[in-house]
Amino acid sequence: MKTEIIKIEKNDSGALTLGDIEAIERAGRMIKEGGLVAFPTETVYGLGGNALDPESSKKIYAAKGRPSDNPLIVHISEWEDIYKIAKNVPGEAKLLADTFWPGPLTMILKKSEIVPKETTGGLDTVAVRYPSDIVAKKLIESAGGFVAAPSANISGKPSPTEAKYVCEDMDGRICAIIDGGEGEIGLESTIVDLTVSPPQILRPGFITAEMLGSVLGQEIKVDKAILNPDSNLKPRAPGMKYRHYAPSGELVIVEGDDEKVIEKISKLLKEDKEKGIKTGVMVCEEHKEKYDADVIKITGKRGDQKEAAHRLYSILRSFDDEDVRSIYSESFSDKGFGAAIMNRLLKAAGHKVISCK
Ligand code: AMP
Ligand code: MG
Image 1: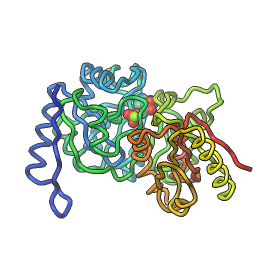
Image 2: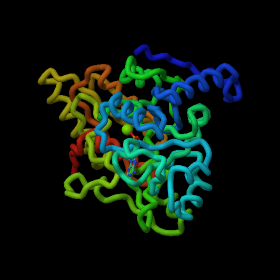
Image 3: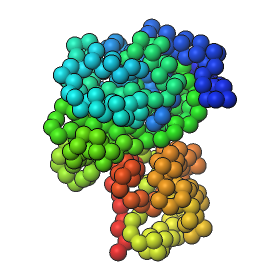
């Protein structure tokens, strides 16, 4: 299959041009006809198909090589559409939507009959998100209103934050890729489960536990199984049990006091170099001069969580592009948005962490 690349131009004020609208409407028709189209959102690029068509969902799993028990998120372009695909929608959903939608928040609700089990990985719940990106919104609307869209990467690889990474993974497998530039946030949406009381976070993201808690007036906790690698607990978001986001080189996180971390990483780099292994580091701006690695990637100024999240996946992919075999990352605070960054980084590293005392 030839994959068409559709470039979004936007005008000076950031609005879609008439040409953009026409092209997105055409892509929407491809989805309506059972095809798959990758598109930008404010989090990462999604791989979209008609969420109400079991055959389209099967095509998504096939294109990604994704296990079919890992459910898809259904994207909508009007808040009221939640009532068409979910039932017993609690008041909390409206409160959260009023504050955080459109935006990077996914809610888990009881599914209605029109959502096929192929889309929900066999579950009787459905994940719903209303994204804010204007290209995403227009595409969902043009495709009929319900677009199942996991991240547009081959299963296990870092989620794509730019169209070129979607192309690397999906060229020849899908009808089209809409290139709308870089996603602003860079990490996938926060997932909150509203079928349990109190609601629980199944995947941390830009919308933090504190933000959800302050709207709902109660403390919101994160599913314990995703924070603890040694636990026998099963994560409640099926996708969180899979190895994810991983570069093909070996990634290790080194945590502790600055000086100790620099000393430890430097020692490891030296050992690798002696063995002739190509090395890389992921470090803050302030430490970039401290390391003698073949490839040095900067996560941003120290403590700048937004920048680190925004850069994380493209850094992980670029280590692969440069064929780095041994990668060391400094650690991040796990407070606020940092919980999402550390969750993804730990998964990418297969939970390999060295603590310096
Ligand atoms: P991705 O589409 O790549 O962003 O991944 C979607 C994530 O949402 C995966 O971790 C899924 O397991 C999770 N998810 C989707 N639907 C549900 C659901 N009904 N219940 C729990 N988790 C879900
Ligand atoms: Mg994904």
